[in-house]
Image (cartoon, rainbow, N blue to C red; front, top):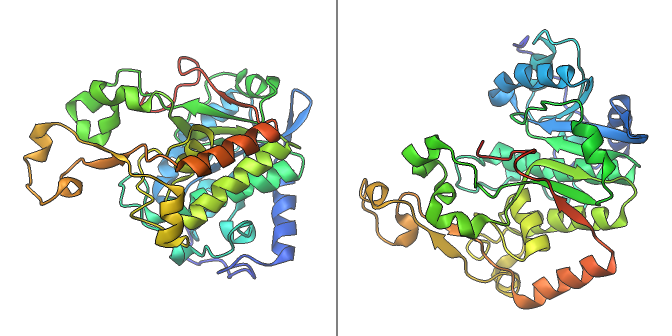
Length: 339
């Protein structure tokens, strides 16, 4: 997969403050821009080497749908070279690293400073890429590009996919993460996704899935939203999905920001968040290994931590004042996890 020779460090490694690197990043984005419904559009994904086995399938489905350009955001030394050796020449792939983007609202994110959420699906590398993803989307929107982000395991099955996304006039749009589609794997192994169990589905009915995310070029409302999410990610140990969910719906998903303030500190955390619910899986799982306290039990996760009322009212007023329009794609046509 690789020659084993890492590339030389760029001027942006560590803090990402090089203006030249950011100009180069914009040129890279422009090199894989295409037109959709008459609008300049950027299609992007993010992954590292450990997930690169998804890339051949992803690229071949993109090519089958007539999509021939993709921007790959990665944070290790080998992913870009590895994907170039996959033998899928129908799709032009350009590569960027978060260090080339700067981090906008919060410049304090270096690769080794990323928080560990303690969730198997969100290791530290994913945290770093998610923060870079938000900055990338902000720069694209600011630069006049519609931007579509796809997780690498989201397969585009139709040539109508991008035109459908570009046709509506929302500032931002998301896949649904309602988890209403029955997946037998999660019934056999509920520890993989406790929120998919029938008793909990009512609590996740409004969940957004940022594995499929669209932002519209030139939208001041979209820029505001992307910046607010970055600010929350800089202040608390939360995912990008938690950030969007909080600003738009008033609560996080599977995070407990009160127990994990990042730069914010305990006082600001108490002014921003309230205590979450706690999600518990089956007794069978809890009995595997007895631990003291609710949070120490297997499968116990914080659920839907709400914003404090004053913070929620602030976000709501800002969204109305900016005319923010957002959309959730129907799960039957734009299936989010688990499908």
